[in-house]
Length: 173
Image (tube, rainbow, N blue to C red; front, side):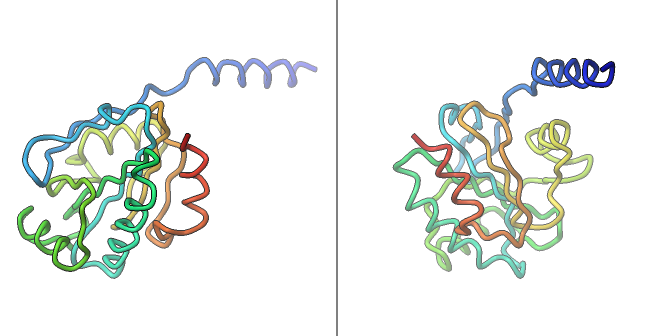
C-alpha cells in the first residue's frame, strides 16, 4: 500500500514539474535570425544536417515533407552542423549546395554546433530536458505546438517515414 501511495505521489509530482517550452534563436543561412518561439502554435521538426554525410540524401525527403505539410502548419528547420566534421566550409557553400542539389526552400540556420560544450543553447536545452543529444548528422527532434519535445529520432529514421509522419500528423490541426 505504501508503494502505491509513493508511486502515485511521484506521478503527480512529475506532472506538476514539466519542462519549460523550448526556445532558441539561430542565425539564418539567409541572414537575420530564426527563433523557435516564433513558431509557437506549430509543430517544428529540427534536423541537424551535413553536406558530406552518408545521410545527406535525406535533404530530398526533408524538402518533400516541408512541401507536403508546411501549409498545414509544420515547420521543418535544417541546422547545418560541422559537429561531426562533415559540413562544407561556409554557410554560403552549404546554401548553394542545398539549392543546387536538393532545391531546398525550407528554413535553414547558419552552420551551428549541436553537441558538446559548444552546442547551441537550443541543443543544450533539449539535452537537459530529455537527455537527447545528436549522435550523428540527420538526427531529428519533433517539437509540439506548445514547444515541448514529443520525439527524437536517429539518422536511420527517414524524414518521410511512416513512424515520423504519423507523429507529425497527430500534431497538426
